[in-house]
Length: 76
Image 1: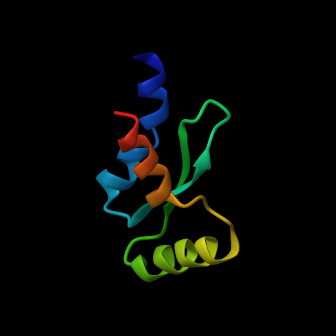
Image 2 (image 1 turned 120 degrees about the horizontal axis):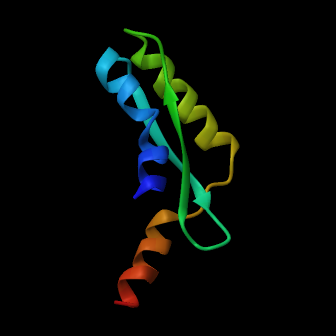
């Protein structure tokens, strides 16, 4: 449980301040766990957060999440 608290510790700051934030999945760890980043922009700069996320998605080769999720569903 301690690890979960450490992982989510930065998230409430954006929630409390009302800053726009986007969670962007970026891949998987060696253990197969999902990994991502959180982009937080200044107040009223929703477009900035969206532009940064769109740029990163276009520049980086993220895994195909649909295929990954389909494979996980098949193993259930």
